[in-house]
Length: 328
Image (cartoon, rainbow, N blue to C red; front, side, top):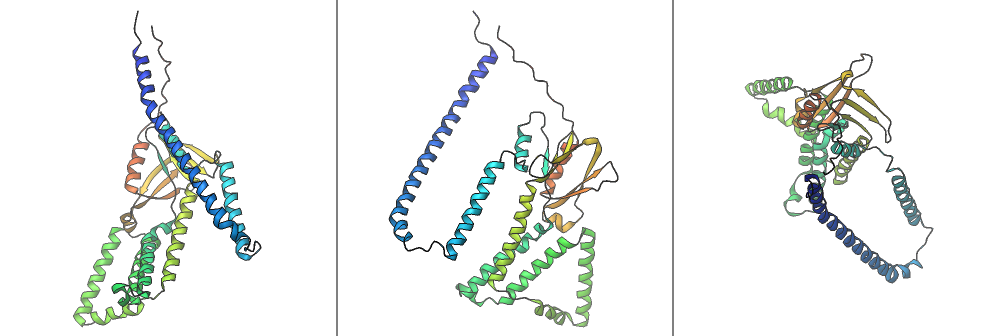
């Protein structure tokens, strides 16, 4: 009488190996459920002992309560919409999970277009730092009370000017070197005339003085702009595989699939300052000359370029699913 086959032994081992994770998952779920029950009981106790007596004194039709009703209704509507549409949404994160689990595709790339305002991240960080320094200065905390406001504003303006050059102009390394050499020649000429100190004093009047709230507002607006760009990228993105390019244009299945022979791709990192920040462009050109190219600003361009080279250099062939061998 023959013993179990190799396939059966492997299946038995895989099943035995999968039991501990399932048990751990059940234990984790039970612990979370227990914590949730305890939290609900604690909140109910707090509400009964502290909330109920104060409810009699509250004006349920006041402006504050109406604003609270609107906020609760908005959040509830958002939760309901998410629960209803979450299975129909085709997000970038979901597509990445699908690509990882596809046995026929080993190399792929999912990218979306960042807003050019993401290049202002140094300015946003400088704004938040300046807001903190201004709050410390106003509170006269430690040595920050003696820091002049125009010095903080001058540093912030310098960072903003650098970001403006990066975002508005395409500065190659050649142009950057020419600009630095020209600036050096100008300073040398002014030094020969004895005008360097006077020339530098002109920039003292360019320093700006903004209060802490102004800096904080600039930083928050910048962060919201980047967040909106990231949220848009959840539904508008490109999936590049060895055999096709999928252009997603919306939260559902709206999109277009293009064969690999109908498009070409190239990497654009000609903007030197933009590249120093880790950004670059992936440009998709089409065989149909009437169609406009697609330019996508991506972060970590070096890694994305390597992944794109691997994807474009391969063909994906479906594996034939062989039926399992029955034991003799």
